[in-house]
Image (tube, rainbow, N blue to C red):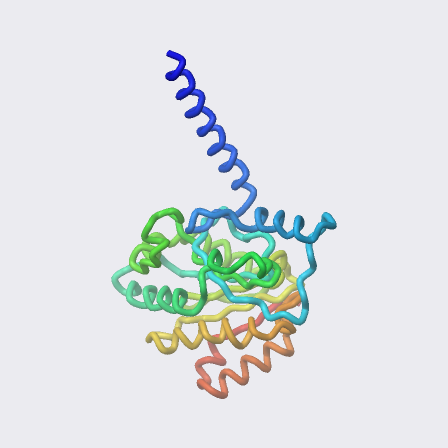
Length: 261
């Protein structure tokens, strides 16, 4: 009887500890690997600093491009230097499924997973590109199964991203998909701030889609002055022109930086 009581107490303690862990995670962002980022990592940064305040992002350090699958309710993820959302006009159909899978393959090939980056790289020094889905904990997500994450895509996140970008002057007249980005994260939907939109409507092969993701990764993120404290219109215009000179007018037509003011 005593052994049975001890066993029951142990099980009860385990349940409580798991529940506490889940409760702590609710203030962070739950990604596909089952980790919480954002609030949790920020707490670790505070402890390393030892002064009770977060370390400021260094203006001389390039933002590290990373990716993650995420629930719509966890957008925007807290603490990141900037973020973007892969934005669909519609869920997968017989007509667009092949293209959406090409977009997924470019997403997977272009960026490392956020959870693979060591804690020494602060969230403030990362630009995260998000793929919104419903079932972030499914094993197919961890395996980057493009068939699954394309069919599991959460169109609600896309609708919200386009709504807020339209408030800033963006237009979404093509079939997409789009990459929609904000820097800093709290600039989303603000009419006095810039929003970056990469339109993949005219990109119908893997090479063209890969190049647009390459622009997103290299020509913007690798230039700290283009992102820190918000988009720099002048520097991004130069980056867009340089990229178009190399890859053609289609690239120039696909990339827009807009604001109401």
